[in-house]
Length: 184
Length: 184
Image (cartoon, rainbow over all chains, first blue to last red; front, side):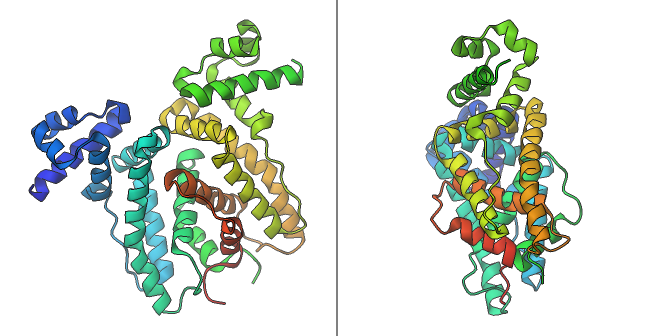
């Protein structure tokens, strides 16, 4: 399938998810909105869950370029700002919140969530590889833990507490995981 | 109302939420299950959202004692283990995941989520107060940020990634926010 057509299907999928939730998302609805035949969609993605997984991982709207600012601190701050934008700015925010809310409610989406986060981490690994080579990271530091601390904090602050992120949030969060909170 | 009776109402509320979701939770259902008259429940809590908010903040099942181990490190590790237990061990896990999933989907619950996390933070403040007096915390360290990093990481790892927490998780997460990840 042509990449452009694929992106149209993904757009339709994520749009329907954001508007109607996972319950309201159907392959038929995606076919209607994207103008692609239902049978064609099923040939590529055998189920609604498979289609959603592909859309979440491959859609341009949710793509986050792994930053390369020259320092681990700069890269992590850019990542935190990227995650914050994803969780707070429409339309991506509606998609992200609907997708993660659905993952909590529908056990059949657990694999989708796993795949999404594994894909993100694989892209982020290069940031930590470069940091190790530059001597910016403790040898035993765990990239998944660092990303869970930073990504989880953005989620908890914006979605659960419903608080805005001030300008200093990214720098302060990254400072905490890199330099700690104990007195120097 | 007698505290014990109140706890029975809260138990019924949280049980119905975990079983049927927020949509399936009704004051009528709570009245049936707790054996308390519907009008009495309404006299105390004017809406289903108000009842749920009270249950989340005041129910014994979700109560987390603020630990006092003698060190900030020990206190934070105990808190992380407490949050992990809450998010992974039934029946509290079903309640917590249902409540937070509902908060994402129902804007009218935003205030409930805010109140829940504000109440938690107020209880945790004493940990940070003691740490400051003992000189274990940088003057400008932000307790809400530290709790968002730690709590968010537990949530992301267990609920979104669906991965188990190994024995070292609490110590490693707390080590990262206290000592950082940069080489010594």
